[in-house]
Length: 100
Image (cartoon, rainbow, N blue to C red):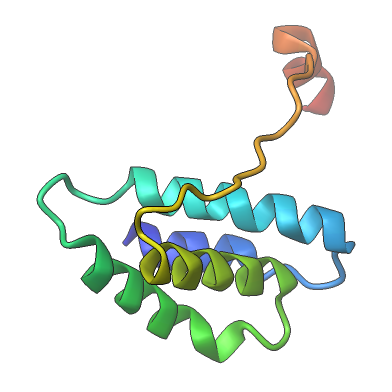
């Protein structure tokens, strides 16, 4: 369920390379955080890669996600260089009310 949601979120087109890279990394972290503790990482990574492949050509963020899956299974002892979003204030309750 979370895998499908992550893939859907990453199927955005027309992104700059930097934004696609950032979203791909966030998608990977979201997917990884949703894995059950008893799951086989290589099997789940292969399942995610297979599910995402039909959309990779048109979605650069999804391509980054798939590259992370491949890198993490090829070199499991090597740490991935993941990008985290910059810390920034988003306006809190006042900002949420302004959107409505």
